[in-house]
Image 1 (tube, protein in one colour):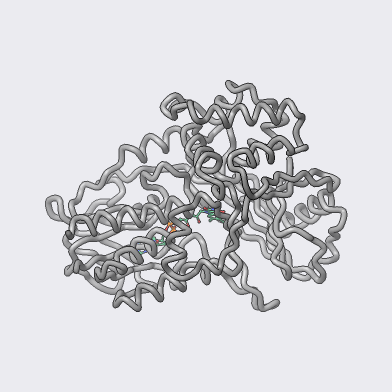
Image 2 (cartoon, rainbow, N blue to C red):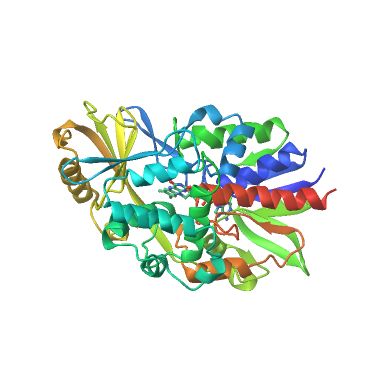
Amino acid sequence: MKRIIVIGGGFAGLSASVYLSEKDHKVTLIESAPKLGGRAYSLLNKKINDVYDNGQHIMMGCYNDTISFLQKINSLDKISIQDSLNINFVKKGGEIFKLQAPKNFYPFNLGYALLNFKALSIKERFKIIDFILDLMCCFSCDLKDKTVQEWLECKKQSPNSIKSFWQILVVGALNTTIDKASAEIFHEILCRIFLDGNNSASIVIPNVGLTQVYAEGAAQYIIERKGKILLSEKVKHITCKGNKVKEIVTDKNIYKNFDYVISAIPAQAFEYIICNNSKFKTLQGIPSFNYSPILNVHFWLKENPFKEKFYGLIDSKIHWLFNHGKHISLTTSAADWSIGLDNSDIMKDFCFELENYFPIFHSNLIMDYKVLKEKRATFIPDIESNMVRKNFLSKFDNLIYAGDWTNTELPSTIESAVLSGRLAAGKVITASK
Ligand SMILES: Cc1cc2nc3c(=O)[nH]c(=O)nc-3n(C[C@H](O)[C@H](O)[C@H](O)COP(=O)(O)OP(=O)(O)OC[C@H]3O[C@@H](n4cnc5c(N)ncnc54)[C@H](O)[C@@H]3O)c2cc1C
């Protein structure tokens, strides 16, 4: 049994702690916020008495690590996994285009879905299928220095298929635009979505608030196995000697009795941690990233006119609408434009946009609203960030990094965070054998 300090209680820290607790290692998880969850958490609208999330999170069937983690903490019943890919896309005016795969006959069912996606011309649909078939022989090293835009142009994708298909996929999956996103990382995502089995392309949506989906179950799992969770305690100093971390100093305590430390905080959080009188980030060469915001607008409605669980909007500043019955949440990725704007202006703008896309919707249905801007929602998975993540290694024998930004080959997602936590725990478990 080893004693491990885990710093950070987001998906990565909780995943590491759960995998370590499973093997009877003694975990002390230190989280600076008064709650677990990191960038994925729930809030209460007190006026309406309804729980909502800081940002609607969607997962996919190819989130294998996340699904295993949720299964481990007994939370699989808190998510809905589609039987197969099924998305309703809407164009201005209300016309709906289905991207829907039959349940069986993978991979032909995905081909069928794409061939019947009538938002595109038949030639454009074939070009997309051709692109996806090409994934099998396109080695990602060819794409190392390419953006997604360069890749799509090189594969002769039309401006309309870029606007009505690729841009939606890229912005949704990578939270950045095609001119910035790395083709290499997008290649990895496409392979996982389209080439990794029947359920990989299915959309997975939480049935309840994110805190209930994972933070509560993970905390219970850790505590039942004699782990400790310390909230509102911030790591401020890390004392090192040679190639070992000796002390973890928080604003409340000093910890010396540990075998390993797993750091599961975002890369930029190292800016505020001191190591032997210098900034930890500079001293240890923690990579710097550019970040991209996500905007979420929540409307609580007197009556809900929406039929489907969610919609993708084509060529709109609102990218997705999620229907939670009492309330709907509207998500915009790569929402840099929204940062300087007033919440009330954004709300009015979104009402207008919704009325244009859904003739069934009228702004007088709204009882209450919240606008949430997460400025540093995710790092931008561009060519440079791909490079620095690959080359980054811990300089200490007893310190392991986790977090969505570490080298998982995935963009800044739940799956990357959970996978990084499992890999970090795995290093401790293997070293302890
Ligand atoms: C609005 C929004 C929408 C998103 N949508 C999606 C989506 O649809 N699908 C998807 O897969 N991903 C999505 N993401 C990304 C996803 O939320 C993140 O990739 C994931 O939550 C990152 O988890 P993490 O554990 O690596 O980091 P974090 O969640 O940032 O956790 C790090 C934790 O470390 C703590 N910490 C920091 N410094 C210290 C310190 N000094 N001492 C102690 N604790 C410290 C922080 O308080 C935090 O709790 C979204 C993100 C946002 C913000």
